[in-house]
Image: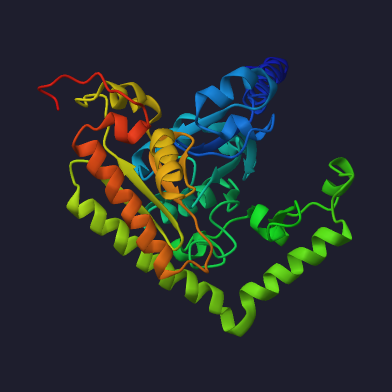
Length: 362
């Protein structure tokens, strides 16, 4: 082959490599997150929320996400491999030119909640948290930890992720940071990931206002006072509340399916009631948590609410000043609810005057 043919062959190869690399690098970015997760309803973050009812109307407006089953290392491995992109690079060694394959960045971030709030108060396992950490480090994929519900001491630690050994590159905090007074939020960024130009391209009219910052500072001082006494209180009160919920479950295993959570972020899940002997209970089964919450409010003056994407689960996220008397009162209400579900007493649960369950059911 003469020099002219060699040059033409190299130019053809270079063009093919350039075309292939352009195709790989033009692939749209990928966001990873977990099934059951909830990350708000803003036009961008709603695509990270697993509930299709929130996501679908805005699907064309933001980068879509790949949802991974929680606590499934194999599923994580499969997604990382299937989305992997590579580019070809030239390497010269002793006068010989060769092509080598190199990984090309694909993943924007892995976004997760250490305790899924709206998904049913589900705690990420330590093992899976560590697998996410390892896999993301290997793929150079930053980890964003959403601690809006679970952070600020709610779990018994300032960050719920710290108890899992999970170290994020970004953290999101909000709501509790404002102490119930200021509407505020904050993003914490690892120094190596921080870009100073971010504040210029994503400025905010109301960010960093003096009032919210002052309130947030005072909230942090209260949490950290007396060597973190608030966190110890959350752990103690949470253990007391969890023990009560477990006792209700033990006495009504046919009604209560599971009790989950950590600290003062707990959930109680009811069994599906679509096969109840009460027509009223059967009719309310798709939204059972709302019916139960209504009963607790109406009959026991207890305000609670189900988790939005797992409506058979009641959430309990009380103040750290929760008293034994309040726990006893909640236990009374839950036992009353469980008894009504066990006996198919739809009239008692829903507050209706009549129930069309059959005599045999009754």
